[in-house]
Length: 80
Image 1 (cartoon, rainbow, N blue to C red):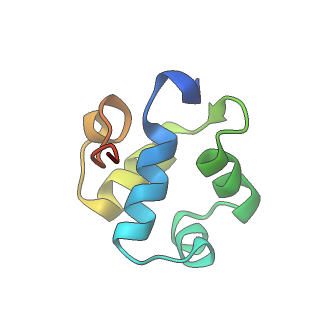
Image 2 (cartoon, rainbow, N blue to C red):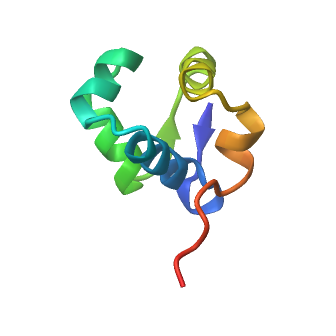
């Protein structure tokens, strides 16, 4: 699955959820089985995100959210 970061809230949601649950980058990467470079590229929106379906389901399970939540809406309220 390839996601265009500028069109989807995924990148902001990953960063928001990780911080909300006080997970360091290293802890999150170990939990997900991904590299820190991959997480950094997701959070910094360096081009399209290449994400497997299995990884997306794992993220949803860890945070107790649905794929609609992860990809379909911005979870954090925009800052005023």
